[in-house]
Image 1 (cartoon, rainbow, N blue to C red):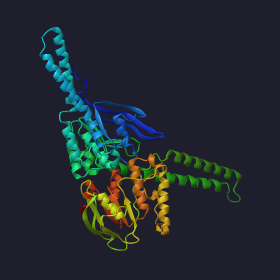
Image 2: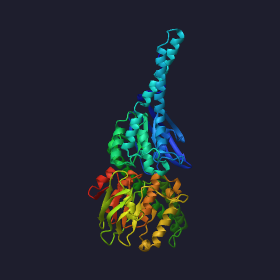
Image 3: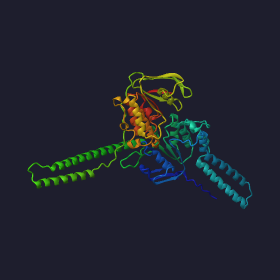
Image 4: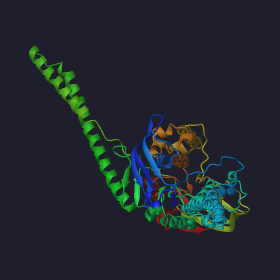
Length: 553
């Protein structure tokens, strides 16, 4: 008797997204998305913050139904979301690992039971009842073996252990998830996903919380993955190494996402040319619209003055002239309506404020600093006026702690930190602590007003959120909890800049930010008069800042 395993062959697996639209309230998030993912796909979803990248990933996974359109999935998938929920305060790292192992270990146990039954059946007499029992045992064994092979369960515990260690995830199974940082929780979840045998991996910002060793392990694993991979990422170096197809959900002239081949460089070249054509077309339409509006205004003015002809003009001449002016106005009204601006305005671009330069040098002086259990020392360095420094090192080395010591948030156990009196420090922390229940505009204005009261805005220095180009009016009107992770990150950056700092302390500043914004931010950091200290794992940012001073922890 031949037994067929119901699970589909891996080469037949596919995710098909057809004309998918997603709307939240009255706001369209995704419009008419068409995408096919096969076991050979290496696809990246990119775009500005809050444009629907994570939404598209959840639609593909089936956890979020589209407003319209269809999604067809053939084959198992695993997803690592941008932030891993805790669900209960008592849930541990061991619970998460056990859940990842449950299905493959159950399949192995089922195979052992089936093998034992098959062995028992082979020793029975060859009567019809025994033959049927042997046939059933054989069918059960084949089905169990098929499930083990599909789940690749043979060495799943070893694979998971390797992934946990390579990603720098927490290995203590008794640790509560509620005690872990967002990055620590994400690494545990990512290890479980990379140890699986899913036909498709869907990963949301997988590089955000990885050090150099973790990045290399994950990139190598994804390159050799036996199924399709879809990632949401802003990591430029990772995209250049990994992606073959780019799905850009950024605003476009017709509102539809764009799909680009040719890898990351092909995408950047095509996108830059398309953006330039869009901006030129928009400016041309704006110019034509303004010219026609001026013509209409002039014609309307002539119509008004046309009713007051010079003394002695015949009545029929006055009427003739008025009629001509009316027709002229109507023609210009029709021309203005026909030449309405049809292109939407291109997205905003970061405009970095002209931050102040510190008067004294060095601006920061760190001497023999250490923090027990968080930062091994002694660490010593000085940063001069207009200084540029990068803090590097593996996860857990203490980069964030050192920035917190410089900012004054953490008191060191040994050593001292000296920051010149009157120097304003702006600290972009890795994890956001924005107050929920308030609109983004309220949060920003409160910070701006505090800066003005502190004397920062006395000479018109206090910067407007519109001037920064970080959030559009619609995003500023949202409550903090309604903002995407990337939008909250933009608001955090805006709050730092609103303080008009002499020193910028930036902890993983490229996390959650769009590619275009990261490029502009990098340019701004190169040119700002402020002192800049950055902690980062971003390989492209490290390459861009290769001539900056380095402190390796």
